[in-house]
Structures are given as C-alpha cells and as structure tokens.
Amino acid sequence: MDQIYYAHEHVTIDLSGVKNTLDCRLDEFEKTVEEFRALHDRGVRTIIDQTARGMGRNIPYAQAVGEASGVRIFHATGFYKAPFLPEECYTRSERELADLMIADLTVGMEGTSIRANHIGEIGTGSGSIKPEEQKVFAAACLAHHETGAAICTHCTLGALGLEQIAIFRQFNVPLERVVLSHIDLSGDYDYMLALLDQGVNIAFDTVGKENYMPDFNRAKWLANLCRAGYVNQILLSMDITRRSQYRQNGGLGYAYLVDGFLPMAVEAGCKTEWIDWMLRQNPARIYGE
Image (cartoon, rainbow, N blue to C red; front, side):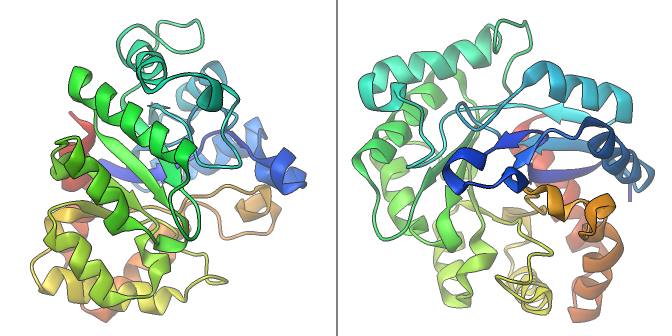
C-alpha cells in the first residue's frame, strides 16, 4: 500500500511545562528524521500534524524534518485544551481567535508563507467542556466557515464526543469535515457507533498505547465497525507525544502501526480494502488532495 497518511501526529510538541517532564517535548531532530524515513520506506507519504498554537508548534523545524525525510507535513492551526491554552484564549474574543486561525490558513504561520492545512487539535478535558474550550470551539467553527478547513478535535480519553458534536451542530459545521480524535480510548463500542451515526469521522489514533488500551481491542473494534459499514469514517495514527515512544529511545516507534498493528487488524478481520480506506482514502478526502 502506498501514499499512506498518519492522521494525528506531532512533529514537534512541548507540553513539558504543565506535565513537568522533558519527555513531553519532541525536539530531537535527527531521531525524528530517522523515524520518518522509516515511515517513508513503508509507504507513508503524509503526516497530518495536529500541533496547535501554544503546543510547541515550530513550522521551520517541521518543514526541515519533512524535507530531510521525504514525508510531507500538513500543519494545523488552533488551540489545544485547558490547562495548555495560551493567554490569548482567555483575553481575546471568539472573533479574534478565529481571525488568528484564518490568517494561519490563508496567509502563513509564524511569519512564514507556509499556510496551515486544517484546524486542530482543539480539545476538551475531563468531565465537561470549560468556557475557554467552548470559546476555542466557537472560534474554530467561525474559521471553518470562512475557509472550509477541516477540524480535528481532542477528546480526552475519548470522552465528550457527543458534546463536541452539539457545538458543531449549533454552528452548522458539516460533520463530514470533523474528526474526533482518541475515540479508541473510550473503550465503549456503543458510544463509537453513536458518534459514527451522527456522520462525524473518528480516529483510532493512539495505536500502541497499551497502557491505556490493548491493541487487540482496537483491532477487534475496527473490524466490527468496518463490517457494520463505517469504514469511510475512520482514520488511524499513533499520536506519539513523548521522546520515550521513539524506537531509538526504547519505544515502539512510528512504524509500529504498519509493522505491528496492521497485521493484528487483519487477523481480527479487517480486509485490506478497509485498511486502505482508513489509511489513505479517508484522510485524503478530509484533509484535501
């Protein structure tokens, strides 16, 4: 299979301040290039980077990784979730935040001429949606309507997907242009069906994070969801956010999705054509070719 997309990754990220560990800062250039070259060897041609404003986004660095590895990088604009939101999310209006996203999408990011491809990952935390997160979602909806950009969200442990959908419906955002991330972490197959029945896309994008969820479960749910007719609404990725997850640092590495998880998914009943939809056709449709 060629032209594979990884739908939710972070070429750079820095959550080390809030999490109080340097493990949560990805800035090891040579190791990242080596990981991405291994992906290129396996047919991966595009990384959908979901690093929003305030998360350690570094456009020149990410572009350099892409050029050195041969993997194309699609960049995001937006704001993450509390407590990782920058000060502007508290002090600026929905309209002002939307204008920042629109400028990233239409003019360029961080003083460059490189434009964002999509809005993401905008997120919600645990329990309920906080006012500042609601503001970011509203701003993202405004930016979507003025640019047509797809929106990728963060669902903490896969939760609050229905509440996020309610916001998008309030702002008349077409759900086929929205991806809800980390839904595999919910561990709730009926909930997955409820989301998909709304017409939204979902991502099984924490593949390999077995401390949260066994990959066997992910593979089983994928096969069942595809068998039930939802194959054109599902995307795959690993969401590597820690140095310790790199293969060179003792982790599984990015290539595990192709080398380790896909054979498991096939064994669970996923057909080759279904995998093609999830790794190629769906992300190409949503994020644009």
